Length: 94
Image (cartoon, rainbow, N blue to C red; front, side, top):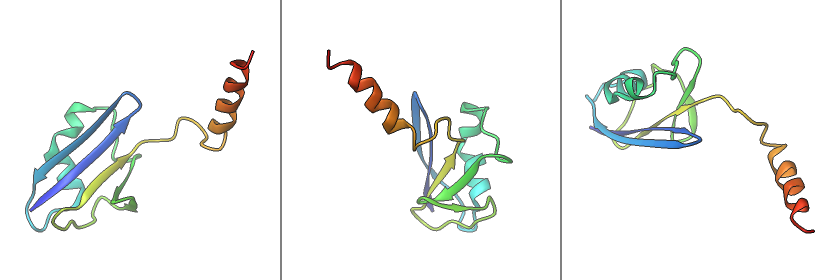
């Protein structure tokens, strides 16, 4: 069956489609995709993973067409980003 693997960094996004066996787990699909070699900073013991935006465990089972997502830690508080952007925009009004 075919599934997708998605991972994003600020400067780069990666979306892979791979063939996996019918009884494949999230972890097996990630390992088979080769994404861990391309992004060695991915640590599956600390990063969360999900299927179509819903957090799941590495032992989660996959279905045809699922999109496995690897979530890295948040580097900025989303609540403060709009405030900082508004403050930056205020400087341009001179």
